[in-house]
Image (cartoon, rainbow, N blue to C red):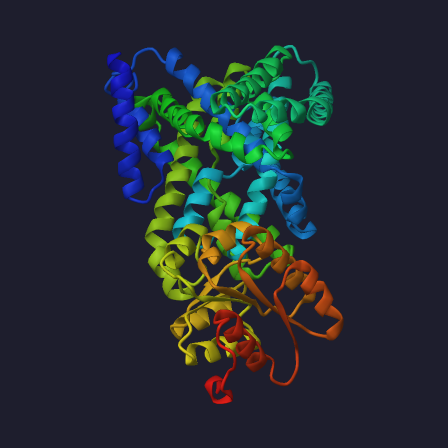
Length: 545
């Protein structure tokens, strides 16, 4: 009981301190675990019981990852970014594997080390993007796309690491075995998801008993993990597969909410356990190699990604930011290193050095982002807000007009409405235009209005009217339809380029439509006032000037 109380106290204290310093909770868990581990204060002597909880943390992390990988999300990533992500993973893994083999690690172990170190930290990168307010920028979108592809690769890497272990035969046989098991697992996913899972979840949801649905979620996660472990694969892979099974059902959000209360706590225990396994004396005695490996990892990954991103056609500035953001190691690297140690592919001392180097690289990224935030904001401005910042900045606005699209028409419309003393909030997807507008104190916020989470974060439901001033009929139709589904009672005014598009916007749910002409902005403003103040019967022409 004493150990449990100490672990929970350290869990809270170091997570809060690290969060306060904007370094992310991962670093706090690692440092806290190292402090109370056997090689430091020695509060925790036996790691087996804690390690079981830690394993469950990874199980729930992989399950959550599977939940996030909806087919629709994968389709949104352009082919160029897919190619960049896959190329980055293969080239980086190959380069690191070659270096590892040159340093004396066996072929099988070098392959695992290459794959493990080629991954970037989803937890750290998402936190950095949020703190810097760059989640919704082009940098954020490309980084998240690359992380998504890397996360998809975690499952095959887990299978491969297991297959490369003792008794697996030749490397070719191991690769074929890994491929075969992967295909078999995907086949099971398709069959179970199509014929069994949805009816079972529908039946349990109809019972209207939250505890029963939560129990089913736990059974699904742990049952899939147990099944894959019995099949000679990893528990984490089973959880990942279970997440994929649920991802394309209508119960995904409910399941995600149910596991959220377990995932964060157990994942924190996992990172603390990683810290506990670090031998402080060993780390101090090998501080030179550890720092050299961490620095080399950051430099190598950054240079490779920079070159590949430029070759893929990304702007040099964006490529440089992307390279710096994704250069660290990954939390999944801890998982793969532990599995490689259990499989006898990598020596214990090497795993210790690499584990500490991964943690150090993650800490460096978090610290560098914190120190560089002011500099980045001075250069680029703070226009491109994250969803959390967007929600904070707009939560106090009520009974206003939301203008979606801040091009020439949207800007002129906003000026008309401001002149009439009508409160306005604009949303645009061009970060440069948003930054320029914000510099002139205009209420313009960055976001993709075709996404439900952006509209909710901007509190669009608190407005009295939304004006969709986008030039593209297809995009406007999609946004209007989304607005109508999310906020059925909200008044929506749309702009269209020609008469042929009026019917499409009406069918999508627009209350009124204005066709482009010589005075589009003025026409929109006059119609907006009528919808904003329905009791007003007429508008004086001078009021819009």
